Length: 257
Image (cartoon, rainbow, N blue to C red; front, side):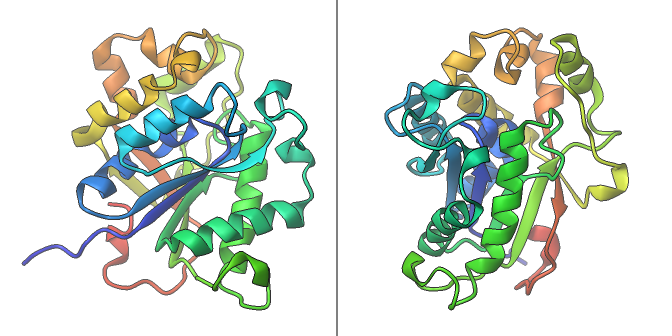
């Protein structure tokens, strides 16, 4: 018996490189299976230095062109000159921008950051989580954001995350460069995906973010300095928490797996 097809998948992440680091394997897996995939990035402008790297990474993953909300990075004023930082933007405005992308793409599944801000607690990660949770619900309600297109309700919302047991060697590496490590309780993880068949694609997408690879503290740079065996061990598993039950067609276990 043939397995049911994998669902269309839209990632919503704060910065260029988050998509590759946190869900690159699942995005590559879904693309290889013929599912539609895409990524919305909350910060950095289309003409910023990181935009071409994002486009290159998404091309590797088969996730289409960049989809940008256009806000500034909380820690980098050059990311979107003249625009609000994501953390300062009016919540209603940011939700509306994301609702428009969700309605245009019409994904069955949306994946974003967890509520803690993805291990390091970055304010942009936390804000992206909050906006996405609200936008996924709003996208299906016709009276909300009528200017943003025809309503569309995704079947499920997942948070990419790391559990206390699953953070492993990654936690030590982040602590060594002075970063916070905020894993979730093990019970919070509902879905663990072995993406080892797609680690080559995932790593190529991470490497596309050349500016971050060249730096010492960002995770792409940390991973680039590791032996290949250790790096593969870290990036070969992705962890998720299903945040909304929602109506699910077919086998719920195949939403991400």
